[in-house]
Length: 95
Image (cartoon, rainbow, N blue to C red; front, side):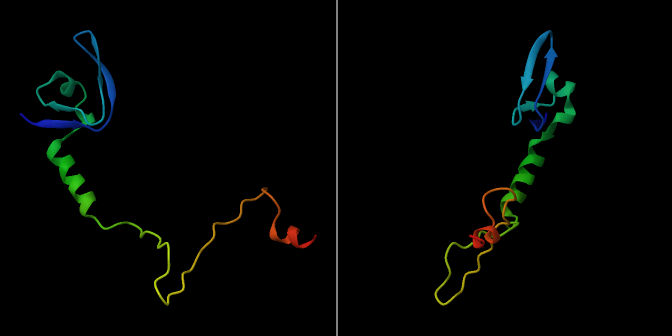
């Protein structure tokens, strides 16, 4: 008897009753709801292994440093200007 975690929410009918299964719900492999949609579930051990891997994986991108260290120049990149909003730098110079 294994325990499985739902990774895809769904609604089904079991014995004439409407049953809603949500992401994170746990069921045993002997339950009717698991037999109806086994593809919507994953073994709890597999889910926990993925979760541990995510927690120990290095960050994908660094966090921007808010201030420069002593003696260090901080570079700032500005987002590209939006088109059609307000005056551009060239239009402001014409006045």
